[in-house]
Structure formats: structure tokens, C-alpha cells
Length: 329
Length: 255
Ligand SMILES: Cc1cc2nc3c(=O)[nH]c(=O)nc-3n(C[C@H](O)[C@H](O)[C@H](O)COP(=O)(O)OP(=O)(O)OC[C@H]3O[C@@H](n4cnc5c(N)ncnc54)[C@H](O)[C@@H]3O)c2cc1C
Ligand SMILES: Nc1ncnc2c1ncn2[C@@H]1O[C@H](COP(=O)(O)O)[C@@H](O)[C@H]1O
Image (cartoon, rainbow over all chains, first blue to last red; front, side):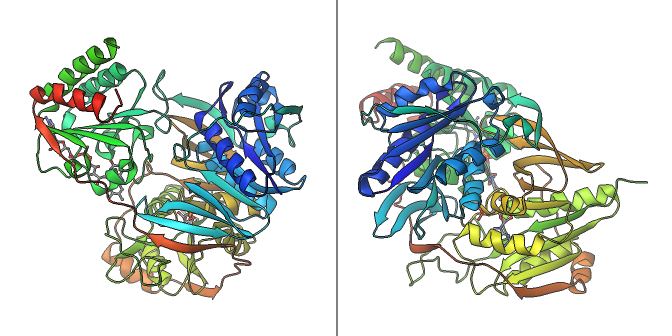
């Protein structure tokens, strides 16, 4: 029997979807390790402890709440130290995180603090005797790698969207703990936050992504992409490197090998050729729609539904039709 | 007088060209390397460029490139020197393990007493797609770490950077020495000039055994992911939109 510690990431005071996915992964791992407990740690400003109930509903037996005014920013040095302290209390088989900006930063720090082997961006976790075996898409999603981790404690970060969050009703015991090091003492000082698009879900979590490429011809025409995203209601906006290089959109919108890697339910590619580096970031999307005037564009090789045509004509028509379809139910 | 000289280490990995079509080796645990082109990993290439620009702007300093790997990494180290790096260190292993923490330990052992002001990494390597080695090295050395940086400046003993987040960015400041992992956004890596290539032949490349320690992560299997079913074109122009909406509703069930 062994317990699993999971970092339940929040945005504002709300749990992120990937936090519930990580709890689900931790629950399954604890069950497979002989029925251990899942301990979730949630950190943030005062009030963040309200997430405990939901964490219990998804399978946490214990929730450690770290509330501190300075934690309204993600204070990585302090959170890493607090998680490591907790993990050292013993009895843990694994620390599980989401592979987000936060998880990417915390994972390697924990691996060092705990001297534990780490696997990043995993899509599947299994127990095989004394080892933990994970699947991880490497080579920018082109090669699926199965990794074996030895060691009594391991650190795993889970790819957002790869594991479906499942309820597993428990009523979590809640315990308040102090940050292990002062969160306001960070050596790296944030001078300014440059916000991206407001009011849209993050690319890593959005069920629908509408992405635009150079085929839109001019920065102004990107509003067609925005309007289609608005019509879907729950869509994020993405872009190709051609577009972010030209400054039509910020770098944070870039999808592909050197940008974000996404797997939404629906990906709509508008005026995108489908270069291999772009495909590396979106080819695992469930359904792909492409609109391009060139019938031989490589994007059509991966598109479930392609329309050959001018984006300036097709996209407004699609926006109107999507609005109508959503209004009728 | 320019800014004070900065001593920079850049950790580089050698990886196959990302545009390659991969096949699995007969061992079943690696890709088949036959016929593949290898080069400095994309993000590490950006890191080399960032280091060279900082030292060019400062009018001095030193850029040292470091790689853990078999002798084939010497080619990548030479390339970085032909771009302008001053010297290179190979930390020799027969093959680079899939254990990012082990690689970080080897790098930290080498960098610990090197007197570096700045240690640069790529934000992640193409092959591992993991993003572990840079942050783990920082933690091993006890240095501040700034990840996914798309702009980097150094002035009077402090660094300032733009860090890319999910859907946003941060402008941060930090004391040196520090570790920074580089995202796209800094200038594209330069091509070596002929003069650079000639000069690189005479620059020092030191080779010594890597102190990896225990390797606890290993590849059990490598496979190609399932192909997507072939795409299909459903029509032309705006007249195809109703059919698309119908399919999104009834077949894909996403609307
Ligand atoms: C190391 C490396 C890393 C890279 N990383 C990334 C990455 O992370 N993400 C990424 O996206 N790219 C990346 N790239 C760049 C990539 O190779 C392509 O250059 C880029 O994706 C092309 O963007 P695009 O499709 O917008 O533009 P283009 O390739 O120029 O395609 C524009 C498309 O629009 C179509 N079009 C034109 N006009 C219209 C119209 N009126 N109506 C409809 N269609 C029209 C054209 O037929 C064409 O297919 C990388 C490249 C390298 C070398
Ligand atoms: N074998 C290696 N030798 C030197 N640097 C490396 C090595 N492996 C990884 N790195 C550095 O660490 C970064 C992140 O690698 P990874 O953690 O594997 O994604 C790379 O971009 C390189 O800068």
C-alpha cells in the first residue's frame, strides 16, 4: 500500500481542469499500488481551501491547504519546497502534477529535492511490480515512448486532456499547512504580467480551438478567427508560427512543435498549410476541420472535414451557421 | 566601457532533424538513426544565439558550450564554436540516458565551480520533449531559474527576461548567477560563416567522463503513434458550410 501526493493547480481561486485530471491519475495509481490514499495539496491566497470539497469528489482522501497572501502569484520556489516537505513525510509512491507552466517548473525541482526519477508529459501510468511504467509522446508527438521508472518515489507530470477526470466520491479530510519557505522571498521578481486574450479558455484546456495562418493575408482579418471562436462560445484562438513571427498574434498563441501542443475536441485550421511543425502541435486533436484555398495543402491529409475555398468567404458563412446551430438548441 | 564581461555556459543536445520521418530500430527501444540528419537541438540553438548576442553586446565575456553525449556530440559542439562560442566541453557517455535528472547531475558537477554568471538551456529537447534538464540543473546548483524565456538581457549583475506562460507572459528580473531556459523569440540561430568554421577548428574542445550517477529512467519501448485516418474534403466554398455544420453535429458531435 502506498499513497500518492498530487498538486492541485488553481487559477485564481478555481481548480484547473488539469488538476482534476491529475487527481484522477493519482487515484488510479494509489488504487493500483494496493489501495493507498490520495493526498492533494492546493496553494493560493486565502479562500483557495474552498477547492477541497471538489478534490474529495474526484478521489482525494486528504487535502492540504496552503493559504498565504503572497501565493496569489505562482511562487514556484515556495510551492516546490512545500510540496517536497510534504512528500518527505513518507509513505508516498509518487508525486503527480499536471504538465502545465506550473507543473513543468515544479516537477524537476521536486525530482531534485526528493532525489526521485521524473517523467514529464505522460499520457498513461501503470504499475509493473516495483516499477512505474508510463507512456510519453516524445519527438514532438512523432514517437510514443514507454518509460520505466525505478525508485520508491517518482515524480510524474500528466499531459492535460490525456486522462479524463472521473468522480470518485470521497469526503476529504482537510488540513491547513504553512508554506515551507516564505513565498514573498522569491529571487525572481515579476515586474509585469502581459495578459493574453481575456475571457477565453486556455489553449491547453479549451474544447474547441480556432487557429489562423498566413492564408488570412492580414492582421485585421484575424478578427474572422475571433468571431468564429466567439460563435462556438468555448473556443480558444491559436496561430501558426508564420502569424506569430509577423506579430499578428503573440507568441503564446503559437501551436506546433515550438509552440503549444494541444488536443481539443475540435480544431479548426483557417488558412493554414499544415507544415509538419504545425501538425506536431495539433494532430492529436479529436476532430480537425481545415479551410484552405489550395486543395493540395498538407493540412487536408489530416483534416476529418476539409473545405476548399477562400477563408474570407467561407469563415464568415461558417460563423453565421455555427451561431444558428447553437441558437437552435 | 561596455557592460561587464559575462561568463555564459550553454548546454546543448544533439537531436535528429525534426522534419525527419522516423522508423523504430530493431531493438524496439529507440529510433532508427540510419539516414537521419542530426544537429544542435532547436531550442538549444536559440540558447547559443542568445549567449553570443549578450557577449557581443557586452563586448567581452566568454561562451562555453557543454554537451553530455557520445563522441558524435563533438560535431555539434564544433558547430556552436563555429557560430562563435569560445570553447567546448564534452561530458562523455556511450549514450544519453532517458533520465533527465541523471543528465542534470552530470552537468551540475561540471558547472558547479565554473564561475558562470549565466547558464542557458533550451526549454525542452526535441527528442525527450520533457523540459527537465535545465530546471533540475538550476535546483542542483541552488540557482534561481527562469523558464521559457523569449527575451533576455543582462546589465549590472542582474538579468531581465520575458517569460512565456500559458496565454500570457511575464517580465521578470533576477540576480546572477542564474539558470535560464530559452523559448523561441530570441533571434534565430545564425549560420556559421566560413571564417567561423575555420576558427572553430582551433578552439579548445575538452572531453571527460560524465558523472551521471544512477540511471533510473529507461526506455522500455518506442513505437510510432497510430496514423490519423486519411483526411477528406467535403466541398468547395461557402456552399459546403451547411454540410460541415451537419457533420459537426451528427457525426463528430462537437456542436
Ligand atoms: C524548427 C522549426 C520549428 C517550427 N515550429 C513551428 C510551430 O511551432 N508552429 C508552426 O505553426 N510552425 C512552425 N514552424 C514553421 C512551419 O514550418 C511553417 O512555416 C508554418 O507553420 C506555416 O504557417 P502557415 O500555414 O500560416 O503559412 P503558409 O505555409 O504560408 O500557409 C498559408 C496557407 O494559406 C492558404 N491560403 C492563402 N490564401 C488563402 C485564402 N485566401 N483562403 C484560404 N486559404 C488561403 C495557402 O494555400 C497556404 O496553404 C517551424 C519551422 C521550423 C523550421
Ligand atoms: N545530453 C545533454 N547535454 C547537454 N545539454 C542537454 C542534454 N540533454 C538536455 N540538455 C539541455 O537541456 C534542455 C532540456 O532538455 P530536456 O529536459 O531533455 O527536455 C535541452 O534543450 C538542452 O539545453
